[in-house]
Amino acid sequence: MTALDIFTYSGQQVRTVLIDGEPWFVAGDVTAILGFQNGRAAIARHTEPAQRGVSRFATSSGDQDSTILSDSGVYRLIMRSNTDGAIDFQRWLTEVVLPAIRKTGSYSTAPALTEDQIVQQALTILVAKTAALESKVAELEPAATAWDELASASGDYEVADAAKILARAGIETGRQRLFTQMRDLGWILRGGHGSWKAYQSTVDSGYLTEKPVKHFHPKTGEVVLDPPQVRVTVKGLERLRVRLGALILTP
Image (tube, rainbow, N blue to C red):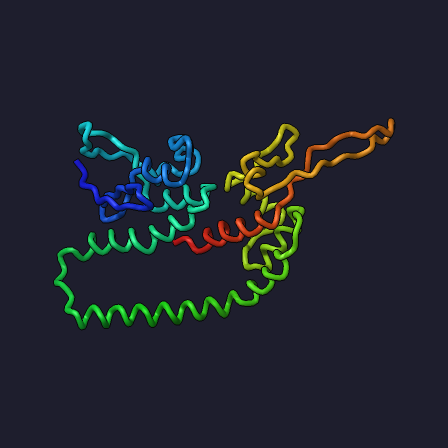
């Protein structure tokens, strides 16, 4: 039987367990918070076999086997969640849960620190984080300025133009790569003719639009409707900047 540590995020429990010194999370808790209607399908589709496992826990209904996810598996699901709070959930994991778990798992037998040692340790961490933050701000300032200039317009953008805007905002991407990234995020899929098609949920969220495309038949002169063109809205650009930027920062 495995012992659980239980955390609470926005009123929902997040059960965790240490296995060989590494934190694992009860998959059902994670998929519920990230808004996946079919948690099992999301886990099978978006995580690798090495990122998931099964562990037995004591519950009010008796001992039960539950699917668990490594921290890297949880990050994979976060990146593919369309829930607005997914990034906040990631920050909570990285800033609150994982440090608490790793401190308990690694230092529970060490001598307790004195008050002066705790203060000194906190100051050392604060100085290091401040220096790193100042360096990061200086690095990102030109990209942030470019973003403000380019993403402040209205309307929508062809994917190639959207990729250029994101690139100037510090996101490594290009036209074909952005199509792949949006597919991995669950925004688009391949249509019947091999062309990209937006999921209706993403259109309803205001992230993408589809522009009708047509051409004239070279022999008959008749109008022929082509598969619609996927275009990225300003709201979609901002969402992609956050989601793809989080992928870069994920440990």
